[in-house]
Image (tube, rainbow, N blue to C red; front, top):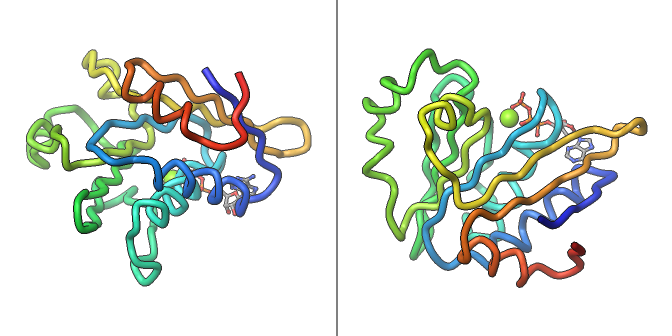
Length: 157
Ligand SMILES: Nc1ncnc2c1ncn2[C@@H]1O[C@H](COP(=O)(O)OP(=O)(O)OP(=O)(O)O)[C@@H](O)[C@H]1O
Ligand SMILES: [Mg+2]
């Protein structure tokens, strides 16, 4: 597990951008944390790092459930399951078909998938401290995710 402290939205985005720059294959990332802790802010930085043009402004897919953005080699799938009633709705999206080496799947409010025993490659937990700074805990569940974290600059155990 590695940790990152962020005092501004820009710091969260820079950290996420650095992660995006290191992602070279499809993977699944769960973003967990209360409302307003910076999950969508993180995805905005990640998108930049993946090379998604700045003109694609990343907004929360709270109502659309999923937003997709293409790069030359990868597709970022940004999901927000906050309003999802059941995982059956994910069948309509074709969630299972997205799980391949091309799709970087980032899920805010992943609880329903976890309840369905879906296992993410990487889980990131966002919390606020007393000063409203963000604390990110990054927990890899396999070697791909572990190696990704090891390539990030300035991280500590
Ligand atoms: N250190 C920080 N990291 C990230 N965001 C920050 C930070 N400090 C302040 N903010 C602000 O907090 C807000 C975070 O909103 P964001 O939409 O990213 O949260 P969220 O976790 O996606 O919430 P939701 O669960 O509603 O989707 C933004 O307005 C952002 O500018
Ligand atoms: Mg959000």
